[in-house]
Amino acid sequence: MTSENPSETDPPEYSRRKFLQTAGATLGAPLTLGTAYRSDRSFEDRDEDGIPDELERSATFDRRLEELFGTAFEGLDPERKDLLVDVRYVGDTSIDERVSTYLEALFRDNGIHMQWLEYPDHYDEEWFLEEYGYNVRRTLWSRSSFYHEEIESDLKDVAFQLVVVPGKPESPYEGAVYSPWINHLEGGRYDGWTNGMNVGNRAVMGSSEIAREQARVALHEIAHLVLCHDDDPSNDGVMGTNEEIDLTAAEWAQMRSGLDAIRDTTGYDVALRRCLWTEQTSGSCFGCQ
Ligand SMILES: [Zn+2]
Image (cartoon, rainbow, N blue to C red; front, side, top):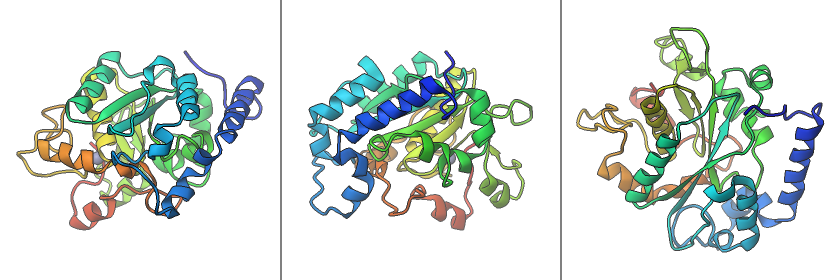
C-alpha cells in the first residue's frame, strides 16, 4: 500500500492531518506533554516506563491509539512497563510479521510489554526523498525534519518512533541511510552510510528483504533508547557481535530501568541518545553497522 502525499497540495492527506491535529487538540494535556512533564515534579509514573500514569489510565488517549493503530494497540497499564513502538513506513517498505511477533515476544519475555504499532498509512516515497532524502538529520532532528513535521505531538514522548525507509538504491551501501556525522567521525570508513541511526526516542532504519536483518537492525535501534554499543566480545547480542537477535541479561535490566528515555529528557528540541557523546569520546563505533 502506498499513501497519499502528506503535503498541503494533496487534499485527502491534508484533511487527515488536519483531522489528527483536531483530534489531538481535544486531548489537551498530551499535546504539551514534552514541556509540561519535563518541568512538572509531580509527574507520576509508578511503573517507570516514561508514560505518565494519568495517560495510562486515560480512556480518551486509549481511544485515540485504538483509532490510529487498531487492534495492535492492547491498552496501557500503569502497573506494567509498556513500550509503544510507532512504526512508520516510507514507500513499500515493510517489516516481516514474523519479525514484529518475535520482537514483541522477546521484549515481553524480558519484562517489557512492547507493542509494535504500525502507522496505518505509508508515506509516499518520492515525496519523502524530495523532502528528506536518505539523510538521517533531515529525517530525525533538523528543524524541518520528518519527525518534527509529521509526528503528531501527542505521540512524541509517549511512543518510540521507528521510521523505515527504502535507503540508498545503489551498492555498495544498498538500503543504507546517510549520516553526515558518521561521515565526519568515522573518517570516511563507511562514507557516512549506515544501516540505521537513533537519536533518543526516535530512529530511522533502511529496509532489507532479509527478515533476520530487519530484526537485528530494528532491535538495535530500539535498544539505543537506553543502550550503547558494546565492544565486549562476550556480548553476542545486537549491541555486541550480532550473533543473537537478543540483548544480554544485563542489557535487558538496563532497558527495564531506562524506559523513561522515551521522553525527550534533553530539554531541547533535539534529542540525542544518552551514550552518543560517551561513545564518540571513547572512540568506539559511532554508526550502526
Ligand atoms: Zn548503533
